[in-house]
Length: 285
Image (cartoon, rainbow, N blue to C red; front, side, top):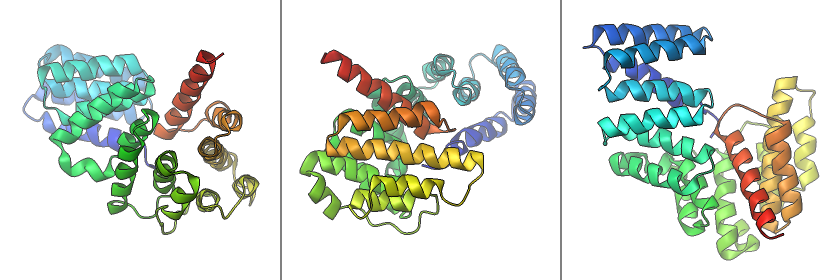
């Protein structure tokens, strides 16, 4: 859950190598990759568009451009390209996976799950590692399935506090907080501060103020402090949600989304959570 940009970079690299037989389109993709690495996203998108103009029936080019738009948080543009990719190649697994992420970011949780499930039909070996699917299941209220998804992730990484916490969150909705704590996944060493203390809090061995204190300890640099406070506030919010304190839950998750923005999917989770819970609260007024 801590390496959000690796899938995008893999898509970009694969796109270039896969286009070896179309020299002109390949050159444009290579140029797009080069300017992207230099930070010129506008030029990269322009070059990707030129490649598509030359080879409009190549599904991989739409996947490539869509992944660029995804990284720029241009959700509608990304989905349009993933749609076109799948129109041309309905068995393009990566397009389903990326579109699922984008659907989640737009708050379309059911659609995200449908795309993740289609991806896993095509790539069943990826099922244990698909923590994004587990998060979608949580927000759809399919807690037993979500619990199983996160338990499966143990085969991939036994040191991820976040995975253990999401497993707990799903289990707590099924069997209650006490039983969920008793059955919480055991983890090794998650080196990210303050994740070990977050784990202890969910286990009942630490208090919320302990998490915030550890996040601020050691005079970290501004960027590191922001990252720590994002995770502290996100998981404090989810902790209070598990305990049934909706007011505090929304307060902390809103702080994570609004005050401590970070790169990657988990910030999208905070933002989507905030919006969903606000909508739910407004519907009951």
